[in-house]
View 1 (spheres, rainbow, N blue to C red):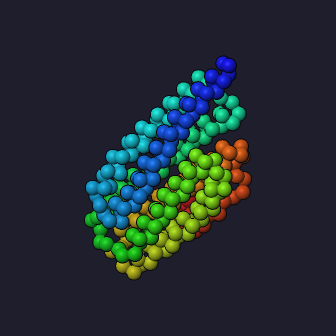
View 2 (cartoon, helix red, strand yellow):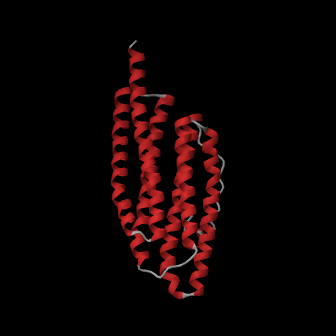
View 3 (tube, one colour):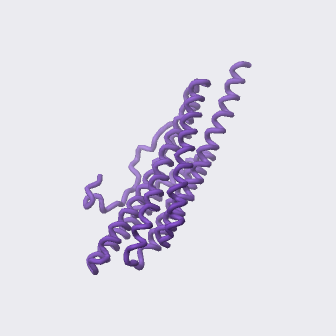
Length: 236
């Protein structure tokens, strides 16, 4: 009877922690879209809202960490139960980092507002950010439903984000070569595009965590990667 009570208490604790994570995910999704909108419309007021909203994301991560630590200490979960709690910690850490990247997008808005406009990249950046937001939504849905197939679909879609980034990178190079006055704006826009690409990588890592929660195994096959610019920026 005591064991049943402990199990029931753990289930309630876990449900509350997961609810916090889903709430955090919703805030991060909004930050991605609003950050991209602020950049593409040069909306400095919206950018400021995104920057201030990052505090709420950070606060939720702290609450998740605290509640997870309390649950582990009180309920002493083992095996698959412990795996689920640890996965929430990893997922919330990734969400916090994605929120930071969204804040970074917003921080560039004011700088871009003072630069000469460049037609073309804004739509591509918006489309790329929207795809990352959809990937995040699907990852969170996959976690809630324990849907391995949906999580695997997200893993594969990271290649699409990389291809969008590569196309933007080439576009920026073209604009800079055509007119040196575009260099400053293109450098900022490239920084933004790279941040969105990194968001996609983090979301893909989250999808792999979903697979781990359900199966107990991290996918061991290399997911598709199409970032052709790493050798230029010195990244690996």
